[in-house]
Length: 352
Image (cartoon, rainbow, N blue to C red; front, side, top):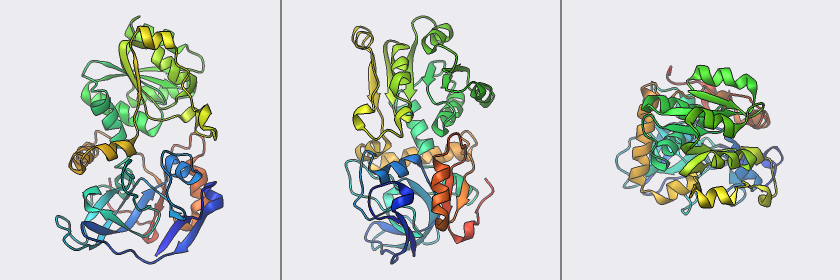
């Protein structure tokens, strides 16, 4: 089989090689998946650079997030699945937990407890992106913050994939969103998409605008994936006792010095107003919940996508041979399209 392998840690286009590898054999409780489509996330590239929260043992097949495919074989005593069944594989390595196979290859072996059956009506493009960004949005809004109908939820990077999913989910749940963007031309777009209020940091004061929208006390719940000074302003905008969950650091995502990945919080604001700033990382969530709870959450995401509550933007297909072009698109500013590695000539199943 073909596999896209990083020979060592480094810039993806420098260290990735297209190799021929033997098809793996599933063991008890495992399934062999014939991969159909798998996305390229920015975090996949940071893993290869050695800048993520875990590091694989090199040489390593790339893609440590998700894919869609069909079951090509089952290990001994593996019940509840059948050969030919279409499944999403949540290939996010649990932390702590055992390593998981990379998805940038034609076949991979996966634990059956990480496989979610999906209908043929759901496109490959949507299915292969089901287990990371939509799941993150659901967990942030419901499990991490338990935002209630009618409450305000403040979020940064509203134009990101997760940001748009948070807007969609919030509208479905009756939650009001205050959405922070960097560029003035993004304001109208986010409003049209369903964001209740939009703040543009290019020419607006975040703290002042939050006070105008939610009142002088501020908001009680927020999610941030920018960090840096913007993340610090979000913490300041919280009401006493409020909490912000930080799940990314886009403002520093090209930063190579770990000491520079900071959020300059104001100690007085945090101490005297007893605010909480804490992190969320999907890998650690998978490492702390039971496999049954993880599949239940994924099943809920599948239902929200099938019902049209959550809409996943269509990805752009690439064969493995064009990996340099695909990697470049994955990190292009405001590209708006997720590159996908596709197999079997990129034919798409389903019309969703």
